[in-house]
Length: 439
Ligand SMILES: Cc1cc2nc3c(=O)[nH]c(=O)nc-3n(C[C@H](O)[C@H](O)[C@H](O)COP(=O)(O)OP(=O)(O)OC[C@H]3O[C@@H](n4cnc5c(N)ncnc54)[C@H](O)[C@@H]3O)c2cc1C
Image (tube, rainbow, N blue to C red):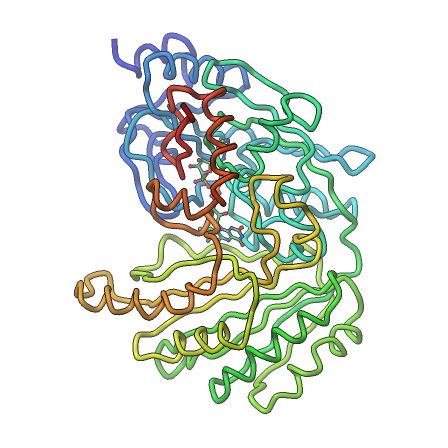
């Protein structure tokens, strides 16, 4: 019998093959459309356990879909689509349980009436699953840390088909690994987070022209170094896209405080002659989140990302050079430090806690760009990426042992591999940034 018919017998009505709408939904992620054998859309953790147990026993690879904004389409085996796991419950003590297939925009909307928020990514449509297991860098990262830092408990279906409750006391090593180790250890059907007060947020943007990018970079670094944890920001250097969109540095900012305080903190930036526009207003946390672009942009992004331990003058010069080249180049700098850096490197599997910023540098090429241009563009991005000490896996668009090794310091990777050997010795959860079992 095929996987499809075996599964259909075990959990009737929940298993979908080629031709079904649910199959197409389950195999589509932000980066593309995969070719799995089947998609299962379970309703309960027990359904998940049945599906996973059956596939794992047959050695069939299993992938998990939460919000579907992953960058790695699934080419084989079974996709467990958590589209039905979207319940969000807010407890009196600020503990919030969230289904493994919910999206961050829905979480923000459910928390708003309670005056609460959870540190997440910047985008509404992105899933709770990918962010809560992979990191979660967004508008509250300096104020509250990563999304993984807010996690208190996870319900996990393992490759053995067991349903575990995992927290600091129950299966603590698994809890450690899940906070940064991605979808390697099982299906997370439910997350419990500690939410934080969300009141008094002010945010917005400042647009600069391209006349003195190095001055903007230095002023931004100095403002963020001097600023309190409550000050969060990203600096995006946009390339020009025709005369209507000349590009230039754009600062996105959020502060738990007043507009007056924000203007004071940003003064060295606001006084620069290259400022074109300032828009700072009181906002609700949910309003800071953006809608994802519809589908993948029709460009080839050539570059990389990484955690920058120190935004030295040399690092900023390399970033300015990478931006100011013939190939249109997009740079994103997200300020870290603050609560992000007060978590010990060994407390979660995201170990690069000394980072001052996350850097993404991408040359933007046509999809059919010549290989020589792609290679030259890569070299131009690499000069800036050389100042980073490790990759943020959730923004890494390729899989492979080398990519996984670049995400973790060696001791962290070895520890993850030991947990993997315990939980998934057959490596059925491998269609991800794969951590191979130790042994
Ligand atoms: C438009 C866009 C904006 C983004 N913005 C940000 C941002 O601001 N900050 C940030 O940190 N990241 C951001 N990201 C990156 C994002 O964190 C990753 O792409 C993430 O993996 C997406 O999660 P998802 O649940 O939507 O994706 P999915 O494709 O559903 O899942 C991605 C992978 O995560 C694992 N997974 C997901 N859910 C589960 C689960 N419940 N149990 C087990 N494994 C699971 C699986 O391995 C799966 O393949 C962005 C991505 C996009 C496309």
